[in-house]
Length: 103
Image 1 (cartoon, rainbow, N blue to C red):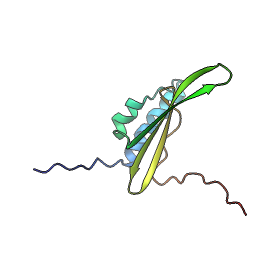
Image 2 (cartoon, one colour):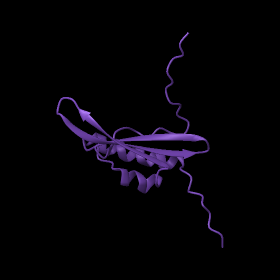
Image 3 (cartoon, helix red, strand yellow):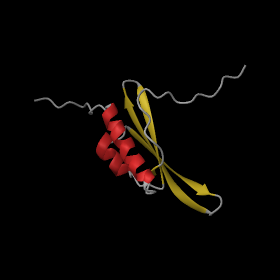
Protein backbone atom coordinates (compact mmCIF):
# COMPACT_ATOMS: atom_id res chain seq x y z
CA UNK A 1 0.00 0.00 0.00
CA UNK A 2 1.26 3.45 -0.86
CA UNK A 3 0.56 6.48 1.22
CA UNK A 4 -0.74 9.53 -0.55
CA UNK A 5 0.65 12.91 0.49
CA UNK A 6 -2.62 14.43 -0.69
CA UNK A 7 -4.89 16.20 1.73
CA UNK A 8 -8.66 15.99 1.51
CA UNK A 9 -10.37 18.58 -0.66
CA UNK A 10 -12.51 21.23 0.96
CA UNK A 11 -16.01 21.15 -0.50
CA UNK A 12 -18.58 23.93 -0.56
CA UNK A 13 -20.59 21.91 1.98
CA UNK A 14 -17.62 22.15 4.41
CA UNK A 15 -17.50 25.91 3.90
CA UNK A 16 -21.28 26.13 4.38
CA UNK A 17 -21.00 24.15 7.63
CA UNK A 18 -18.48 26.65 9.05
CA UNK A 19 -20.63 29.59 7.92
CA UNK A 20 -23.81 28.08 9.39
CA UNK A 21 -22.09 27.58 12.74
CA UNK A 22 -20.60 31.10 12.59
CA UNK A 23 -24.00 32.67 11.83
CA UNK A 24 -25.71 30.70 14.60
CA UNK A 25 -23.16 31.89 17.14
CA UNK A 26 -23.31 35.44 15.79
CA UNK A 27 -27.11 35.57 16.28
CA UNK A 28 -26.72 34.57 19.92
CA UNK A 29 -24.01 37.17 20.45
CA UNK A 30 -21.37 34.49 21.05
CA UNK A 31 -18.91 34.80 18.17
CA UNK A 32 -16.64 32.10 19.50
CA UNK A 33 -15.78 29.82 16.59
CA UNK A 34 -12.18 28.96 17.46
CA UNK A 35 -9.39 27.91 15.09
CA UNK A 36 -9.69 24.33 16.37
CA UNK A 37 -13.43 24.28 15.58
CA UNK A 38 -12.73 25.52 12.06
CA UNK A 39 -9.98 22.91 11.65
CA UNK A 40 -12.37 20.17 12.75
CA UNK A 41 -14.53 21.01 9.72
CA UNK A 42 -12.02 22.21 7.09
CA UNK A 43 -8.93 20.35 8.25
CA UNK A 44 -5.55 21.92 9.00
CA UNK A 45 -4.68 25.04 6.98
CA UNK A 46 -1.91 25.06 4.43
CA UNK A 47 -0.34 28.10 6.06
CA UNK A 48 -0.79 30.06 9.31
CA UNK A 49 0.40 33.58 10.10
CA UNK A 50 0.35 34.94 13.65
CA UNK A 51 0.68 38.57 14.67
CA UNK A 52 -0.27 40.88 17.47
CA UNK A 53 -1.93 44.23 17.07
CA UNK A 54 -2.06 47.01 19.60
CA UNK A 55 -5.44 48.47 20.47
CA UNK A 56 -4.89 52.21 20.68
CA UNK A 57 -7.82 52.88 23.00
CA UNK A 58 -6.93 50.20 25.53
CA UNK A 59 -3.13 50.05 25.21
CA UNK A 60 -3.08 46.28 25.07
CA UNK A 61 -2.19 43.73 22.43
CA UNK A 62 -4.46 41.02 21.06
CA UNK A 63 -3.69 38.05 18.88
CA UNK A 64 -4.44 37.99 15.18
CA UNK A 65 -4.16 34.77 13.20
CA UNK A 66 -4.69 34.17 9.49
CA UNK A 67 -5.39 30.71 8.11
CA UNK A 68 -4.80 30.03 4.43
CA UNK A 69 -6.38 27.12 2.60
CA UNK A 70 -5.16 26.46 -0.94
CA UNK A 71 -6.77 24.22 -3.50
CA UNK A 72 -6.71 24.07 -7.30
CA UNK A 73 -4.78 27.33 -7.53
CA UNK A 74 -7.29 29.21 -5.33
CA UNK A 75 -6.82 30.48 -1.78
CA UNK A 76 -9.26 31.05 1.07
CA UNK A 77 -8.06 33.36 3.85
CA UNK A 78 -9.68 33.23 7.31
CA UNK A 79 -9.13 35.79 10.07
CA UNK A 80 -9.13 35.02 13.78
CA UNK A 81 -9.02 37.95 16.21
CA UNK A 82 -8.32 37.15 19.84
CA UNK A 83 -8.67 33.44 18.91
CA UNK A 84 -12.17 33.89 17.36
CA UNK A 85 -13.23 33.69 13.72
CA UNK A 86 -14.30 37.22 12.81
CA UNK A 87 -16.06 36.76 9.45
CA UNK A 88 -17.76 34.23 7.24
CA UNK A 89 -15.64 31.92 5.12
CA UNK A 90 -15.61 33.03 1.47
CA UNK A 91 -16.35 30.29 -1.04
CA UNK A 92 -13.88 29.09 -3.64
CA UNK A 93 -15.58 31.27 -6.25
CA UNK A 94 -15.15 34.46 -4.17
CA UNK A 95 -12.94 37.00 -5.86
CA UNK A 96 -10.94 39.17 -3.44
CA UNK A 97 -11.47 42.89 -3.85
CA UNK A 98 -8.80 44.39 -5.99
CA UNK A 99 -7.52 47.90 -5.64
CA UNK A 100 -8.64 50.14 -8.51
CA UNK A 101 -6.00 50.58 -11.16
CA UNK A 102 -4.35 53.97 -11.34
CA UNK A 103 -4.52 55.77 -14.70
